[in-house]
Length: 186
Length: 192
Image (cartoon, rainbow over all chains, first blue to last red; front, top):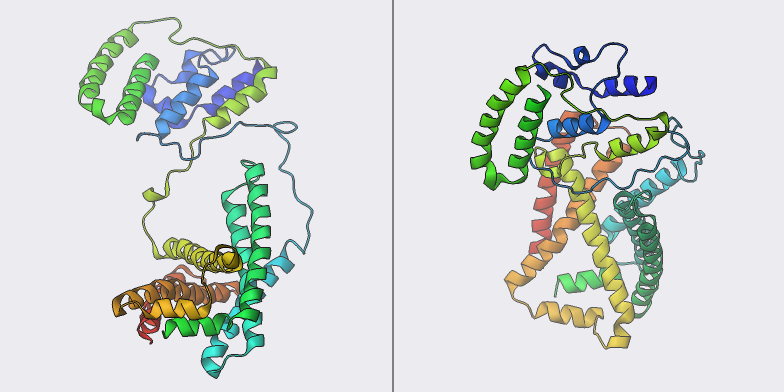
């Protein structure tokens, strides 16, 4: 009972008690009696207080699962430079490498097949990382773990096939840069 | 007092959920409020019901409370600003470019199966058959995401080395990148 009383009192916001024109909610109950408001009533008031316009549920709250006890801290993942700073630096290295690779054909005026192949490989890695970031951001593991796994595997398969496709294009056709040039000036 | 508050809130919620009712709900709420005030001033022993809760109910109450927490409002309530507009544009343009590359490569790989002609020779032949407006339009629509994502990518790399990070600098570089992207995309589109 003691636990419930402190919980209830904390849950009442100042704005709500001030609306009672001097007759605050605390005076309703004696210090030895728990507050007369139930939890559900208070929470309903609080939500209604907050939303003065119509509520639109874009992402309604899913089932709330409490792992362990309510006071457990959030699990801290094992620190790993492979998933942290190395990964971050690698992403930047790939992005930065795209600048000279993109500028080189313009600057040199000629097209080198090796440069073109490196450009294709770098673009593929850059795209893969970008799509990975999209999946991680918009398909959170705690909400849609299966959909996320499905998309991740689809991306891996897709990147692999795209790599094969680019290899075919590079070996059988004129190469990415030359192809764009020919279409652009057609 | 609580009864008055309850009627006020429920009429407000009704009004918010069904705007068509607002014409009728507003006077009704006022009338109910006057009535409720009369009732509320009469001394009553227990204005609301009490629900007893056991300590073992703590988790279910906590879970129920969490579900009632307010969710973030939709993006449309935020003021359009160059900072976050360019941020999401960077992601959208990158997805378009990479998506295009992926779709083309997969289609090229599958083309022998379906008899599609996606070789550079037939593609350039098709593109050459278009009129000047269509050519310019298509080129601009491809060049614009490319130039924007490229220049904004450089802006991101500058941030990554810890430069140009103040609010003012982010806005200035943002407008700069936008200007350079549009101009260079137009130059590329007019290139023949």
